[in-house]
Length: 621
Image (cartoon, rainbow, N blue to C red; front, side, top):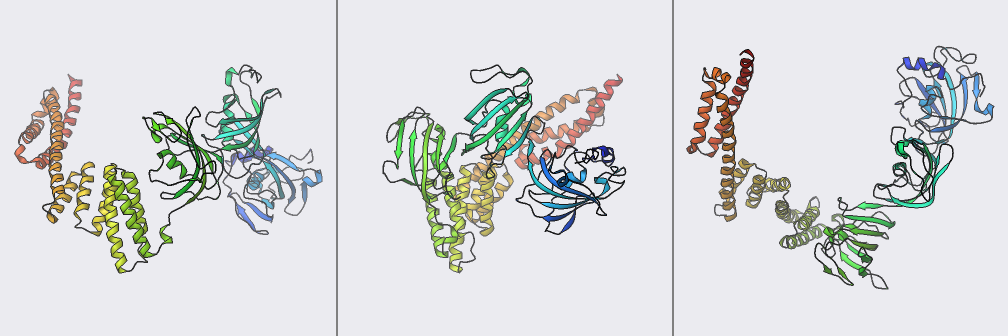
């Protein structure tokens, strides 16, 4: 590039500033063009014509170091510059004002290997001044640009504290998470090149970090096999105190910037199975395919169970034994293991770490090869050899769906009797899923399906009441009532839900309707009695609450301001009326509650106004 030609165009920055433009990314869009097609991109008159398609789907962004070849011309065809004439490509960093705005906007829409012709209006080029002697004032320019490559530079923390320059692209699309265990190589130096720390392979948990905070933050943005250069400010290095030398590493001075070459070799994915970090699964070997076993699937495993000290208490499927077989969610193994295997793929090998709440609990447990002490965390090495899932509804004929639903309902009944309400609920829900869509059923099958659906929804509601999910219980009962408005069980269970949700009026409506249908129903009579007691209890609490308010109002009545207002009798009358209502229990509970609430609001409003009057009076005394 000629020394006398200031191609970057920074000299016209004032013109851009007047237009309200700065160095941040602009919303230029990324239009999909066909070769030979031209289109305007952005809102500032920039046009792009695609000459050659690029590779992949990624585009460069601000801070990336791009490498291009270009040819620049005026609209009349006069060429004023070309990287080919200089015998070398042109490299620059996006977003730092090194090139004209038209380039900034245009190159961010390109892919690797793409060639495009950009027509750039003067507002995005050199403006009214031009760039003498080659570019006249107010000149529209054309640039043929080929994007050869770019090095991605990311501001990881968005504060300039860790800049990541990608040296080698990684594989796939996944990044490590906080619980994962990463294996990295790194080399850390001071700005003057002094080596302070190096490792040809170290493993650590991302959340725990290693060496300095920058490493754990950086690896969360990296892919497997990716190599990067990190520029690290003291905030993410060793801060204002620095670090003293160790047996392996040199000292780091206070407030030192670091440059770290980092390679993410691999990582082991660690999943929080129960969302409370009490069952963790670390993948030691990735599985095949994407399918995983669901509830009811038959799984075939190899497993070894160990205590924290290495004692083996269980071993199955090894030493030429057939794989250990069981059905998922059938209470055949401890809960933590049962839940973990549902996340595994065929061929996957994992270490499952299970705390006592999901293992053998507080009491010791005699297992196959050893005793597991109470409150023990246990470790299972598990290999998913294979699994067979239950048939889904779309694999069954209409009659098979009804039979499968009936079978699941019976399984649910067994679990309900055993007090396993969550497991029972899942069986009933599975039953409903088999018969949810009736389009393929004949009339007789539709009747059978409707009976099953009503029964299962009522049973799910019973489970939800036991599990204290009252809103869901109410919803399910309402669903049944919409099908059968005289279903006493649905009204009864919905009334139970309403009572727990403190919708006592709605509960009373359902109970009265149920008694109209079945006057001798013992359960409904019992809950009706319970409801009456609840209503009395709530009304007593209301009376006490409002009584306390009245007592405070009576105290206000003694103040000068209230005395002044009391000349008109407003406060005194309201308080007296409310006292009388509370004493007259013969009005009935509902009338009492209604009158208290009806008179409380105006009383409070009077109190507020007299309180203001009291302040005004005190100011004049």
